[in-house]
Length: 266
Image (cartoon, rainbow, N blue to C red; front, top):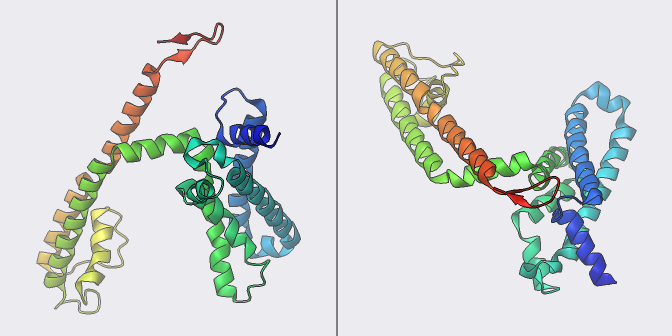
């Protein structure tokens, strides 16, 4: 009896059956609860709303904490069904150290701080905002998030090379701007790390305008870096765009079941 319950719990929480009505309802409910948690955290930063609805927000947090705790414990209880975590002790320990299990744990821990009576308001506020990490739980339920993770993993080499080139460009631009502007603006460009703020704003073509060059050489370098930045920061977008197209094409080419007879179609 206990084994069959574990298998059923694993099927529901693991989503191993595509046409499982109960699993779909539970997973959809957890997704909705995660999104409502994000909305509650955002509204909780509005002082007037937070003061007027403090009991409601606190009750919703306790309800969410209970649901997420039950979900986490149910996954931990049922994980030996998976052959990778078959051992009742070491298997559960290995499961608890997997990335998504750690995300589930992180979703619970910030909500437990008020229960244990933490009095440091700054510490408490920081960990309450850490509840935003609950949105990472969507990676377990959202197909869109899973596709994004696959694309990032598949294109990690190209993205790493692009980020490396961007880092080198930032270092060169910031160093050059420091040597060109330090004598004219010692407070604005006192060192290379401070010049990196200008470099980031310029390479990304954001241009906040709070830091800018005044010398002829500095203006020339800024124009050059801004022009290069347009192309450099378009590279990651192009890499991700091609990755999404490849993933969607791969999914289209995969066999799928016929909705009438159930046979696999090419």
